[in-house]
Image 1: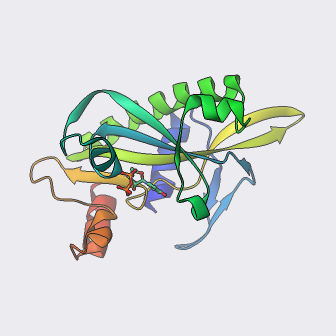
Image 2: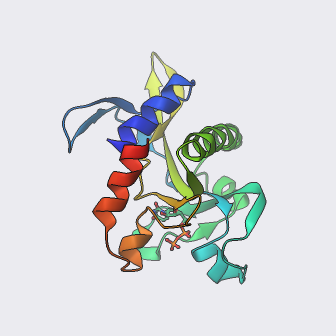
Image 3: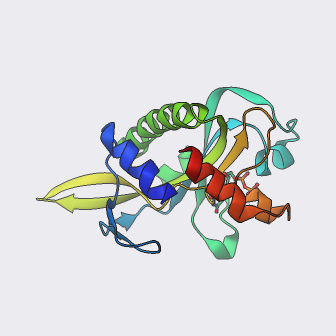
Length: 185
Ligand code: UDP
């Protein structure tokens, strides 16, 4: 329900997504896209792997959103790759990459405001995009889900974690936290 709400809100401001409609509590009808093999991680506040990798202080607010690229390959542990790797190995062409970067900034701006309006800091999140040919014209759509499983969400006042870190860090009350996000949205 959270992902459906977020994707349809994005759609209302002109971001094209793969979502057609929710069928029931567990299934959604989506457009079949050729998924681009990159996970786009967007960060507004430094935490998680970024702080561990670079020794940045946890909770540092970034002056500008940081976009990181990870190759979708579970066997290799989704390694971080650069723009140059993406172009060299043709995982995307330069037009697709630049277009997606612009789209990500719009998505981040929208989601930051949406969550802030319900007292939640959007710390970081992961996006995926896919290609689809419609009437001979290639389009790129936002795909996958956007939910507390793919975002870090902290309460603005208490900084309480309302996302998958409750599971990752064994903090408990994960269902209550997700329901809290759903209720506020
Ligand atoms: N993320 C995700 N799927 C992944 C990897 C990361 O949804 O396979 C999300 C994660 O929930 C967080 C953000 O991307 O919101 C950044 O995660 P990070 O790189 O800090 O990884 P972690 O600390 O989880 O290893």
